[in-house]
Length: 570
Ligand SMILES: [Zn+2]
Ligand SMILES: [Zn+2]
Image (cartoon, rainbow, N blue to C red; front, side, top):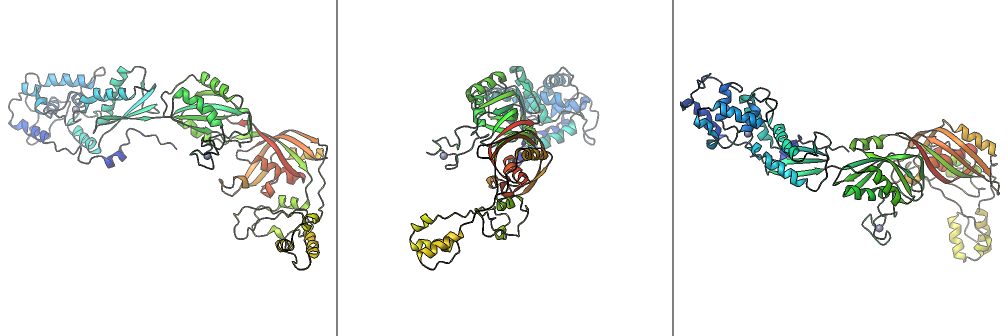
């Protein structure tokens, strides 16, 4: 997800750059090369005979003179001359070299009128002020702290400059592109003092295109770290597009395009957008909780991203207060501070153990229902439908998994038929029903009704309900247990169907109460590895989670509610 565009990365750009540019045939240059032989006006003795020997490089006087003759501009002369002192700009150094070397030689003094195009920079250094001005104009509406400047220069031009720089320039001379960027940067910096010019992680990257002499801005997102507590149920963590219209807006969602009227993301994002004046926002949470689950305790960390903001630093305290005010008790945020893109990765990738408080009801379970809870998890061959046969109040069948082990398990519950209801039906309706329930469909209405009633599951023996002490004991023993969790059906549409191993790290604060009807209500806190399906750990998910509270206490467990407590990270 990191796609930091570095200004030096012009490989791609090269592919669509005008290939003709930069391959300039330096005819002027050739002309200059020939000058020394015929030109007797140059009064300094040549150190080397240019007919036979290589031309001297700067910083030797002959080398400097040659740079002059080539039509080199002041900035490039200073950059390549090898004479620049620390306090000087390249341009200042170049001016000094020019006046020293060309002293008394009028032609050399005015050589740039004769050869007006600098072969090293194609006169781009002379455009540095213009480029700086373009950047400043583009930044007018942004309140920025950190600016990075980059340049797009055709590859041919870079290569050509490098070739002649190595041939005529002093050893170790600065390359063209960084020198140009630095020349523009220092002008921008002196005009906009509050801005820091950086080489990494800017608020804005201003990219100079030397072909068109234009500037484009790459506006980077602003990031805020924070933590939230979700105090109300029914709020999803992130925006959730309306299922009916996929976010376009319809009657069902009252034109909002959202499935739910609010989300943690919007509750934080809408006030923040006013602070940053951004275009869009994104929410990166350390894990998530279900829509009906509250998130209490030590808060869930997140990084909030504001895309295309107009400013990058705000009063975090004030923003936090406004978010909390406007959320009206639905959520509560804290720990706001500046963040960055790499923290998004950290927050998203931190596997966080979490504590949950869960409340569930305990009712008796029948033997066949219990069998489902403990049926071998990877059993794809055996069809559990064959088990038990008649004599059950409710039959639970596993789906036919012979051909498709990925097919979700199905529950088929046989309805209990009432004699009085059957008597109201017409004979042909009874015949259809007989066929459905695979019993003989011949005979009088009375015979059919009798046969149908026989297909009713008979009374089934329920397993004894565990007592309070047994439940408390099992909760204690759940600590340290490794669970095998097959992807629950409720999330199967967005997660691969796999069996995962997850550990219950600890269990705490159990309480059991016996209700008037003899059933139990149980509450306890458990801390699990990141990625544990907690409700499933309690009810067993028809045997997809093993072991489970339900399979261990041999009773039916129905979850009443679940809260996320502490998140053990950050
Ligand atoms: Zn130049
Ligand atoms: Zn809609």
